[in-house]
Amino acid sequence: MRMIGTLSQKNQARKFSDFLLVNGIPNQVEEEADGYQLWVRDDRHLSAAERFFSEFQSNPEAEAYRGRGASAGAIRAREERLAKRSPVIDVRTHWHRLDTSVGPVTGILILLSVAITLLAMADRSNELLDYFFITRYDVVGPYLQWSGGLPEIRHGQIWRLVTPIFIHSGVLHILFNMLWLKDLGSELERRQGSLYFSILVLAVAILSNLGQYLLAGPNFGGMSGVVYGLLGYCWIRGRYDPSSGLSLNQGVVTMMIIWFVLCWTGLIGNVANWAHTFGLVAGMAWGFAAAKLRR
Image (cartoon, rainbow, N blue to C red; front, side, top):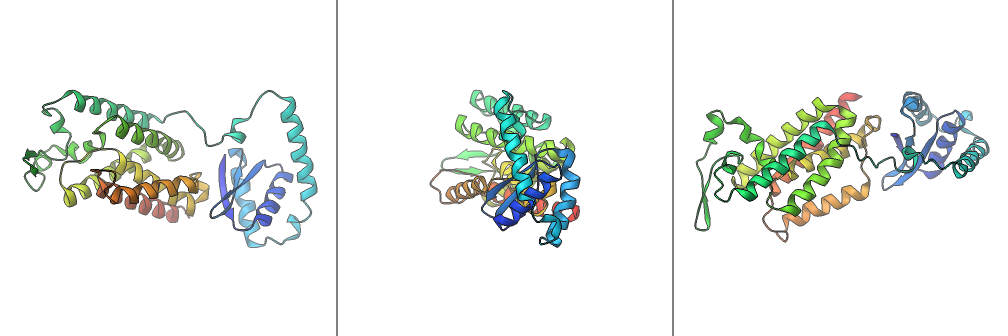
């Protein structure tokens, strides 16, 4: 399934959907907060559907789009009859956003997160875990003490710019982040490729880690900055470049933004809010730039 665009009016979306179907392109319309999304069921029809969509936007009242409802209705009725006779369900139609596969880079990120989090739980002295924080620090009473200027990184331990994303403070923390990483990461990796996805993750990780360190200190960890970066990228890239195939349900975006704001209130506890913020902004900016360059 690939989304080809969004129309603001229901009757226009239905008219174009009928036109596509009559021209041999199975599709469906989904209502979202910003309008009616048009999805093509088979990627082989994507280029033709995008061309038709561009032409439709230029002149939606053209004669070619009129009077297609009856023919399209007959096709849909025939499809429904065939579906009732067949025990096979086309998952591309019924659950086009459900995919249990995990991208290779996404899988590696999940495995590293689990491994280092288990290490954190087992390493009570934090001697090994110290190598994964952005810089070493000491706890002196209620305060943290550390050397400014990231001396370890300046002396060659450049992995510290990234590795805080693998440190999680508990089961719920890592479970929440890994579920989001699996869904957002696998979809983005599948659409954009493993190399592109890896570069995006590294860039967002470094920016969100540096932002959190500079504004709140070195005592932080977690994949949530990267997760918010992936969320921002998919959200904005899909909105401004529907042909990318990336799309987020408005309810998902709303829920994540509510959680983002809730974390800033302090009710959730000690949260790396600056990492969230830098990650989200970086992802949105990258998604917007990628969409504009695509055009």
